[in-house]
Length: 74
Image 1 (cartoon, rainbow, N blue to C red):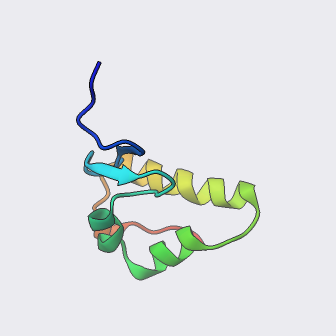
Image 2 (tube, rainbow, N blue to C red):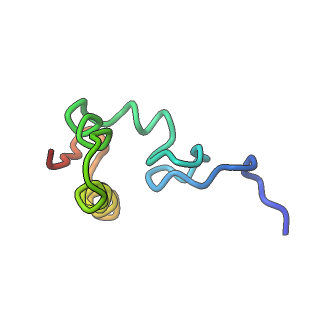
């Protein structure tokens, strides 16, 4: 079955538009996140903490929290 997404992409969990592999969101949705949320998601650290922050993002997206109001623990 053919796909309409470019190779190496998967849908953005927020808007369902293509996002690059290895990225949490597409560029437009990433830009809409508050600065502190982007900083927290970019933070390097242990894998368990990074996974927790990603789960926070996905829970808030699933709950319908607007991108501009997403909060991620540091």
